[in-house]
Length: 256
Ligand SMILES: NC(=O)c1ccc[n+]([C@@H]2O[C@H](COP(=O)([O-])OP(=O)(O)OC[C@H]3O[C@@H](n4cnc5c(N)ncnc54)[C@H](OP(=O)(O)O)[C@@H]3O)[C@@H](O)[C@H]2O)c1
Image 1 (tube, helix red, strand yellow):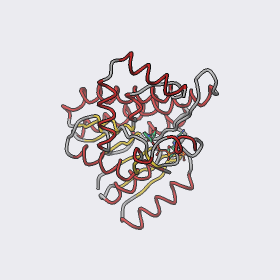
Image 2: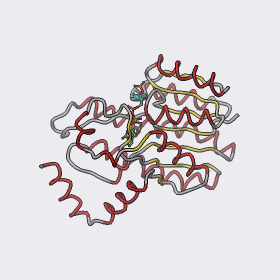
Image 3: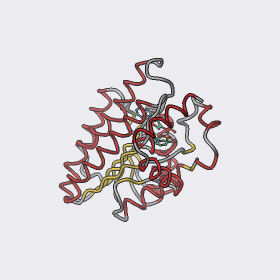
Image 4: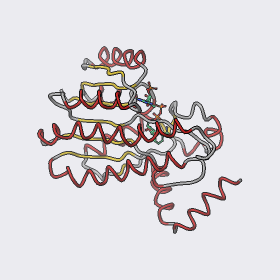
C-alpha cells in the first residue's frame, strides 16, 4: 500500500487529507502536537478503511520537533506522499502583536516544510516517484496590513514549490503548492471577526479543497492548485492589477 505523511492532521484541512487518503487506500503517518486527537483519528481510519495508521506527536515549530520528524522520515523505507499542511494564522499589525507567534509562524510555515521535504526527497528520487503537497494559501498572492507575516510565509511556500518542481519533476516527483481560499476549519476559532467580515459565498469546505488537490496532483496538473472557481478568478484579477493599485486597495480596505 502507498504511504502518506500528513502534518497538522489533527484538524481542518490536514484531517480531511488523512480521511481522503485513507479512503484511497493509503497507509498513513499523522503528525501534530495533540496526541489524543491524532491517535483517535488513527484508530477510526484504521477501523473504517483497513489501513495502517501511525501517529508521531511533534511540535514542528521547534527545532527538536522538526529534526526528529525529519530523521524519522529519512529512515522510512518508502514514502509516496508528504503533505506539509501544519499552520496557523494571526491578525494584527506586526508592530503591535506578540513576536513569539510570528517567529513560530516562520518556523512552521517556512522551515518545517523545507526541512521535511529535504528528508523525504532522496527516497522519492530513488523510487522515481512521489509527491509533495505544500499547503500554501491564496494569501500568498496578496498582502495587506494585519496579515503581513502570514502572506509572506505563504508566498515562500508557493515560490518554494514552483522552484522545487523544476528540480525534481524529471526524477518522477510531483510538487504542488495548494492555495486554498477561506475554508471552514479551526484556524479562525480565535478570530471570530474573520467569519463575520468575509461573505459566506467566499468560504469552502476542507473536503472540497483536498479532493481538488489530490485530483490535480494525480492528473499531473499545474504546480499551483487553487480550489474553487471564485478563488481562481479572484487570484487572476488581483495579479492583473498593477502593484501600486493593489497596494492602495489593501491599505484603504484596512482603514475602513
Ligand atoms: N482554513 C483556511 O481558511 C485556510 C486557507 C488557506 C490556507 N490554509 C492553510 O491550511 C493549513 C491547515 O490549516 P487549517 O485551516 O486546517 O487549520 P486548523 O484547523 O487550525 O488545523 C491546523 C493544524 O496544524 C497543526 N499545527 C499547528 N501548529 C503546529 C505545530 N507547531 N506543530 C505541528 N502541528 C501544528 C494543528 O494541530 P495541533 O494543534 O494538534 O498541533 C492542526 O492539526 C495551514 O497551513 C493554513 O495556513 C487554511
